[in-house]
Image (tube, rainbow, N blue to C red; front, side, top):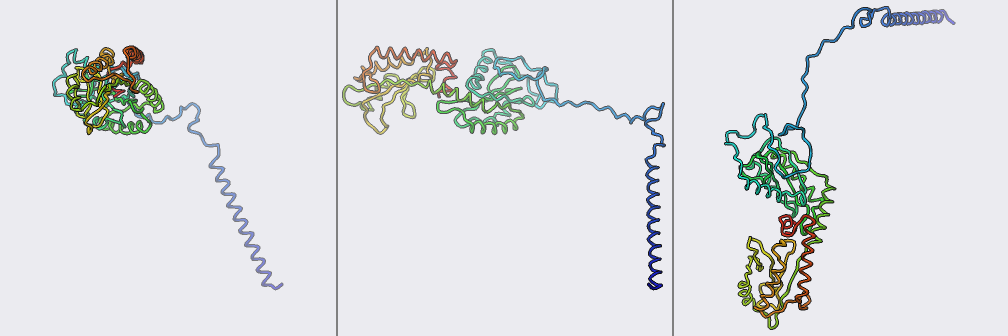
Length: 384
């Protein structure tokens, strides 16, 4: 090994020792610094004996803000079954009025008119045959302001939709011009003669109802769909089970009758000819007791058979629609030289007709028991 190599090895060793020593010194300094930083010799200002902890500055008092839905009475809102009896008049609303206040005070209608309005409201939104749709209003509204919006939701499928309002005088009534309402109630008919309210129709109703509610400043209360569908099916079963129409036929004893001759005889008997060509027997109050069909098209010139038809659930028992129809048939027998027959051209005796009349009375009793009397507004809506 040469002298140069020995010198280089020596210098390298000295350098290594110097670096090692320097690292050790830095490590020692860092250790002492950490120990001083975390030393327990310092006084804890929060734990000094005999001194109270330093309290944080007191925050400024904050007023509690409670969100309340607008209401028109002083008591808490309670969900109850809708009632169309006259509730107490709502308490005054102590808020900035949203309606024009320059109008004269609303005059209360006479008692007879109030009663009529309440009856109309009940017939339009009926808890027995309608799905009720309560609407909470943000503020009292005028009828003329909301009627155009409500007119956009009149039918869902073939089921009518109606709205009534709680007038400031405390009575439920149909929404009308000049009225001021604090609450509203909607209703969609659950069933008709043809179908029950179904899921698609109900979904459409809810969607459209929410749009209407947004426009008039209301919040709708939407019933559960499954419950509504069950009620609709039950009601439709009743309707189909009581959709009774009784027919009495007159068959000519000779040649077929000429239609022109029939027209004269039927007018003499008291029938009215409707624009659609139907013959109806008026009931004296704008309705009819029963109808008559010639069983042929308008193009035919003769017919051998006439049919008198009674829509049983649509005629009140007091009117004795079946008795009136049989009396009319007997009168036409003499006018037209005919025989009263059934659907199979078998002659109907007086005993058979009396038996049918007894069955009609039993039918009326069933409808009364279901609280849907024949000929009532409720029955006319369901069997229209």
